[in-house]
Image 1 (spheres, rainbow, N blue to C red):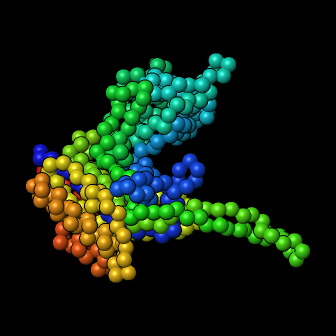
Image 2: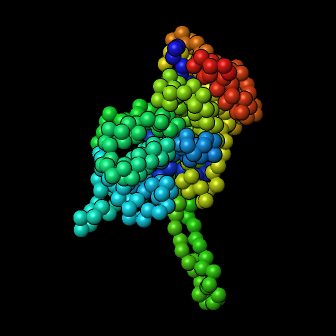
Image 3: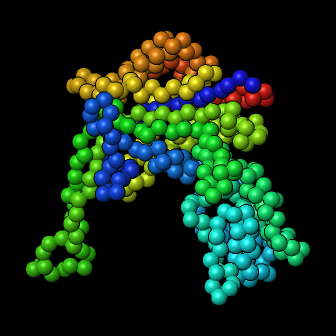
Length: 374
């Protein structure tokens, strides 16, 4: 099977916002090209994409990442046998995870109390359901949990989000899953200075005219930016993990939709920063992923005649053409979804379509690469 790589590029303008905060509450930034840029971490946007998956994929195709693995498994065991007490279900869950070696059970006076992982453990819903069924089956048979079988159940039927973003299990490296998708930190195409909003809140129960002053005062740090976003999906690796061509196509289509429509929710109620990208460009390659961030190594400087979006689109189009020309890169497919004249320069790089047609077009290409009818 030939290699199939999907590169996704996007330009997205967000208004005053604080999408992704650091430990002090300030919007995250990075220095690139000698100037400070707004930044949204890959982890923040991957989280937003995973949340968006819930509206795009069936629950059985997704996973759960939590430390409270015992609680999750016990609920499944109890659902399979409602006559079990909560304590009995928790004990079976604890014994199952202890047998696998994924988590340690807490004990109180010799009785299993609960089981919790020391780190976030990523398991698919199907894996958890299968482990619950196996644990209950062993209990009914009066036998100890089969460690080998339970470990196999924890390492088969991976969910789309596990296949896309990977899984690292510190205590059991042989069930790690290599990520098929890489997401870059989004950075602004221009220099950014953070600003501060000084706010006051009025106490609704202050009615005395002599009692003046705000009930609360504070500041919120923010910035606004046009972001360059990039992600890449290794279709071959995704197919290897999921083991099914139809599931692989569905995963790619869900990812492209979620990538374009998701936004991290940091301070969302304060800033209502929900926007859609000014442009999305997808290039399918058979060589390697290529991040075109070099287009913005020199920060965009808007003028009265041209705003940031138009200049960023032109810089991205020029850089892609130059890089692909210099290295002999010829994408096997390319689609563009863009908004208005500001990003029209990108139209020369691919077939101009709506986002829905872009998603289905890439899905058809994936199906063809995997040897299935589109």
